[in-house]
Image (cartoon, rainbow, N blue to C red; front, side, top):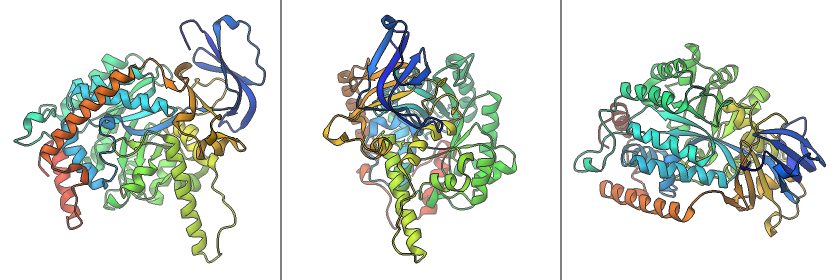
Length: 506
């Protein structure tokens, strides 16, 4: 939407609605009035063309905006730093080094640039699980950046502390030892009152406040339950947490089981990863209407186990609330469609192996379809966040979060199966137009109202400073700091001490 337009009409597109009642509609129009989809039909006529912008979607795929349910946007300044890391490398380097170096201005630039990149990739909704809040000013910076970007978002305030750096590097640290757990809770209440009152709900605003819980390894199930209770006392719409991280899970935490026994599970909870969940825990999550987010690329690359998404979808069908996320920008791109594509082929490979293990020869059919992962990237993600009635599909009455993908260049012609084309062939360069809440934020292939030249130099300069500082603390950090002979339990013990107490060395 612009200042002069009160409505937008998208004409002649191939509309992939992700609404089961509508399916894929060829040569179809979409009318948007204000921030809402009001009509989907061929050959829509409008009464006042002077106040309506027309977007010609001939030879384009029109789809819902993608949902990124788990992302640490502050790491945008460190792209490619962790692409060859194990999870052990990541948690040690990010959580006890890089996270302690960030200034509020670093957080702003990283969050803003990350959100802009997500919009460029057609992501219209993101959950920012922010664990770089070293001071109250860091939280304010992240919130301001998200608001400036115009993306739909939940800013999930991380309660845990990055540890202050030890001497002789303490002068580089922005982590404040006085910013205690009690002070963080008080600041969360301050942030709610200052930035999100009076209506901190998805229905009333595109940017809401949530909570990112402490790590279960440091807080324990009882600590997580207490944080959930605190978030609910503030009436926050979302609480998110990392849980059951595959090979890194010791098998003794069973956080979801403990929360279920305490009757603490609910539809306001969003859990990331989960490869180590028991079947009983998966069932408990579904019964309680909790959301689940799989981040396929980081989970498979960093040893977190096979993505849990289809295990839950296959087991519980339409009752499951499962979406996708990018996770760490320091290791992977901000492309949710790439996450969907990777998950599709990884799951097909696993399905085929299981078929062959039964002695039935090679598989003759491919039951896992492209639409299955597109659903996770759209409606499934919206359901996981608890906003499935608001976004996730192109349906009359829902908010207008829309992506227009052009099928004009050599890589996108011909279009025989529109859904397969979107999932298996498209990338950000094909996305012509993006709308968030009825407002055009990307047009002509570029995100609007962004001074990219200035932002680009700011990102480069801040990244260079952070890398130099980190390498003065841990030489050759980007090569990875874990060794085969290291004792995993000892590394995790030291990490837990550092994170749990807000101090300690690795």
